[in-house]
Image 1 (tube, helix red, strand yellow):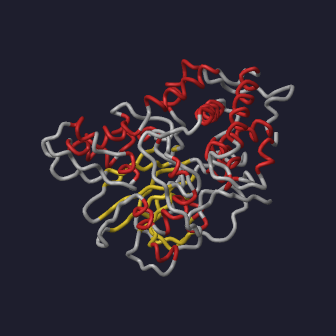
Image 2 (image 1 turned 180 degrees about the horizontal axis):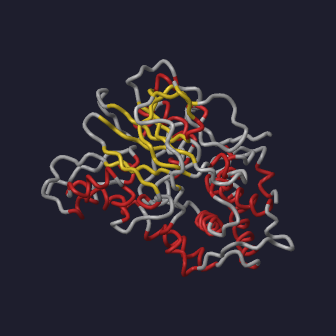
Amino acid sequence: MDEHEHDHDHPHPPHAPGESIYDARVKALESSLVKKGYVDPKAIDEIIDTYKDKVGSRNGARVVARAWTDPEFHAWLMTDATAAVASMGYEGRQGEHLVAVQNTAELHNMVVCTLCSCYPWAVLGLPPTWYKSAPYRSRAVKDPRGVLKDFGVELPESVQIRVWDSTAEIRYLVVPLRPVGTEGLSDRQLMDLVTRDSMIGTGLPRAPKIA
Amino acid sequence: MTYRSHADLGGREESRRVVPEPDGAQFHAPWEARAMALTVAMGASGLWNIDESRAARETLPDYERLSYYQIWLDALQKLVDERGILREPSPLAPRMLRAADVAGVLKKGAPTLRTSTRAPRFKLKDRIRTIGGDLPHHTRLPHYARDKLGRIERIHGMHVFPDSNAHGGGESPQWLYTVCFESGELFGGEGAREALISIDAFESYLGPA
């Protein structure tokens, strides 16, 4: 199998040419594996549906919103995130060993995987393209403030930046600071303020809409 | 033994910006979704483990030119070819993931925590120095954090050791620690307050300061 050989002399951006080649290759490999009895095609559909519809960053947003309003849950989340998150029904693949880290006025947490693309699937779903990209993986540890600027985030010099490189099977969830002026909001409304990027630490939660 | 990872990118010279993406964006072509799911399904077959899978990806010679799911698919193809899965007689898979079992299997995941069989060598706040030099095998100790002074910040129990598990050496669990460094120690110059950076490090990556 060397269909991608002819790409070798032509560096190209991700997702450029090669696409139809890969389309054909996935189909060929899947059908061979199905024929040999290694793969159930319905299982493939089921996995895709799971990460399209069920397991995504809204899981994490629900966890964070609850942590903002329920001090007991927050304490549990900070001491045993795996169990606290599992109690809300989110557990398993790429969330087997979770640690939650709390942002404060003095400390900003940010998560990366410089070696591949380890990411807490159980609470955030599949990682976005930038998280897996060379610019993020190389610069997040060496120039985190520069990376934050790429996301339009500038933090005061007094804020300590803390980067977590997920080099083993521990997965990290950032609990962002609850925005001011959100006292009267329901958990549902709070959830909508919690962006995916704010739970990776490359963004901040949305400001509440003035009612 | 020659082994070269093309995936160890932390701290590397890089002038490109990070391009943010809206929440919810997942796949940029339908084949990406199928490549992801096929990889997950075959990962559940028991024919190889996640560390062998990562090793197959990071040693792809054209790793840096491929997009993420191209890497996944090429690595899956490589494992299939290496194990002779499509040849006769093909090896028996320990399991086949059926549609009805997907939810249960994903919910269970593959925890790497193992029962502690010895005491940890280090305790919280201990000063350590990471090992240096070349590691000619799959490893989870990034280059930027080799031969550096850090401090033990968390202790996670004994976990499957990828350096062994990726090469047929078995799980050989080791104590796993979060080790924190100052950015000046890792990258020089910028000053200690610039940032704190941690890795999760297996015990054999660490020695006394």
